[in-house]
Length: 81
Image 1 (tube, rainbow, N blue to C red):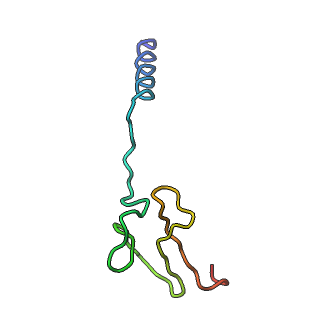
Image 2: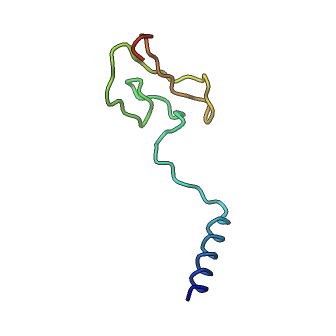
Image 3: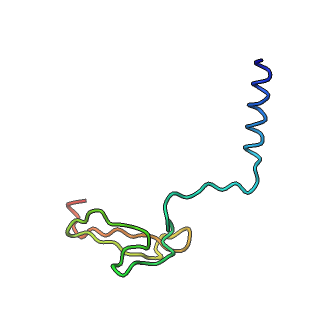
């Protein structure tokens, strides 16, 4: 019984690790910001839940890795961040 269970587990792990072309679904839409922005300036498929006066954001190519675009958060007050 234990040998059978161990064999099933071993086969499952081996086939699971060797599956070619396996990609995990990304749960965030537009994670690399390459779809641009909405008319409001918010990145496409993103939502702002709260904003604080003196803070802003922009899409930029500074420090971008995937897709060549990154989200830059801007804080105008040095003593509040």
